[in-house]
Length: 64
Image 1: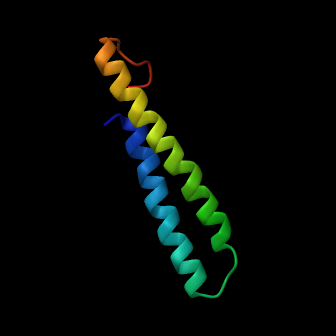
Image 2: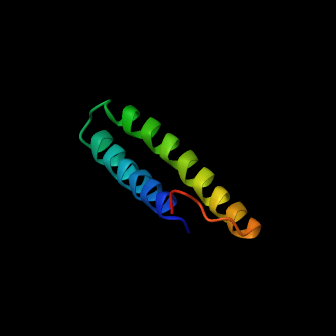
C-alpha cells in the first residue's frame, strides 16, 4: 500500500475516533470529524487505486 494511502487511512481512523468521543461528550463538533473521515477515506481509496495502477504499468510514482 502506498505511503500516502496509509497516512490518509490513519487520518480517517483518528477522525472517526474523534467523532465518537465528540458525540459521546454531547458536542455537535463530531459532524466536522465525520466530514473529515469521509474526505480522508476517499483519499485513501484514490491513493490505493493509483498505487496499484502505477505498479501494473511499471512506472514509479513521484510520491512514493
